Structures are given as C-alpha cells and as structure tokens.
Image (tube, rainbow, N blue to C red):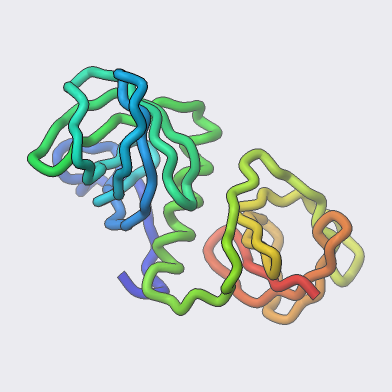
Length: 188
C-alpha cells in the first residue's frame, strides 16, 4: 500500500470471518513462548485483534504468548493457528488498547512505503498524554504514538496545519505531516 493507504479496520467484507481485516505490515520483534524461551519473529500481517507471525519455532495452538513488536509494543494472546513458517495469535487486551492499536496500525500503513524522515530511533511512549499548546494558545490533550530525538507523532482531534508551531509539554515543535486522526512534528 502507498503513503495514502488507510487501514479501515472492520468491514462487512472481512475475510475468513475476521472482525478486522489484517494489514500487511512487516515488523520485527520477539515472542516469549510458554516454555519461557524468547524467540525472534516478524509480522506477516496484523490487526487490532490478531497478528500472524513468521517464526522459527511454533508454539502449540491454545498456548499463551507475549509478543514484543518494534513500533507496536507488547501484545499478548493465545495461539489460534499454526502454519509451516509461524503462527497466528488472537490479541487479548482492553478496549482502549484495541483502539490504540487500530490508530497505530493505520498510522504505520500510511507511513509504509514513505521515505523515513527521522534518522533517529523511535520509541513508543505507551500511555503518554501530554498537553499540546497550539500557536493560538489553546490547550488540547494528545496521545503520543512515538518519539525520537528529532520529532514526535501523536493522535489528536484538533485540526492542525503543516508548519504550525506547537508545544508538547516543554518541547517546541513544528507540524510537518498530517494523517488521519493525528500529526507528526519536528522539534525546534
């Protein structure tokens, strides 16, 4: 999918009776198997309620696993299906986390294929809700998606403009990109 592709989530045309369509994202990670061993893995596709992983070892169906994925963070759930090169899990989490995953997957799909603008590593500050102060002085709470030394991506219902100056906590930034439900900004 290109830069303008949008993950829409639930649709009546969902394949295989899934509640959400899976987005074809390649994210590296690792998983903790029931035997307490840690193994490398890579996503094949992902949705807010499930993920298919390519992995060298396959846990048995029904076993509980914890997965740590670059850019999505910690997920846990039960193995629902095995395939020759991996397995799929049904993600178990709160309704709030399902919503956060849907936004994050949408954002990653929009970014997929785009040139990476930040050369510094990103981290997911899960549960971070700073106050954003717009150039006009109005205050709004936002939810951070990721942060690096040079910039930040966040969810907000406020309409922003490219180039608009904002403050996030004590950090000043300029909006550099808009996406459905949020924006990215470069620190200044």
